[in-house]
Length: 126
Image (cartoon, rainbow, N blue to C red; front, side, top):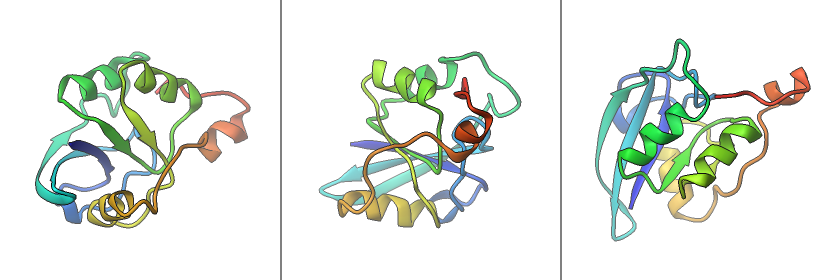
């Protein structure tokens, strides 16, 4: 299994969670084997400054990701990920390591529109 996690810093699995998937500066791609972290690489988010709708979900899918953990995401973006067969999980906090461990333990599940999307009364196109 391969999990992508949004990150605010370039510290691998010890990075702080990025709270919005489209604007985070990094993604940490985590390989999971037998329910444990088996390795991770950090990838800069080339779309952090702006990207077309669906561009980042395609990038994530092309890197063999099964699940994306993030702080928040608009419903339109969730739809793009779902179209690519990627599970989206929002509400992640703390570090990448903590989010992955919570996900693997079944403590982090599901998704809801991010608060920013709700405040603007629209969905983000990220």
